[in-house]
Image 1 (cartoon, rainbow, N blue to C red):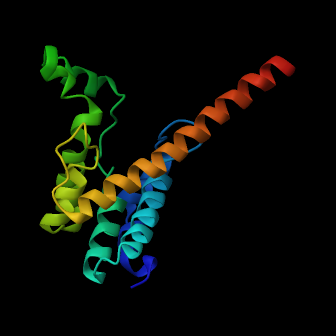
Image 2: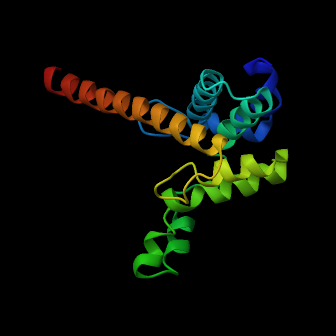
Length: 169
């Protein structure tokens, strides 16, 4: 199956389209673009690893939905949520630790996921999340790290260019 055939229903869903308005990893990158790029990377990795077509499809869809958590993690409401916890428990309830589980739950409710997809989404933030337990989870974790590293690097360059132009202008 092609990438488009695997992902079209999700990419065209109104709740997924809303991710275009959510900034991610700074700079000019959106959560929508991060998710699509991660899914494309996972799709290519799964093919390079000669995964069966069913698993290629599974990891591609999981990658597309891995950050589909559905809340504004920088909001006052989320900050109030964290205040209920103290010490280490507060750290483990920060966005980086919990958003995979939230994304898996929400994606399952809206799109219906298999167990391997839920596990992959839940642990994609390893080592801040549980260790991946299946091939989809490892591929998704790797794809997310590759794409996020590229985006953060571009964001650093974006900020440096902005500072440079302020000094020069």
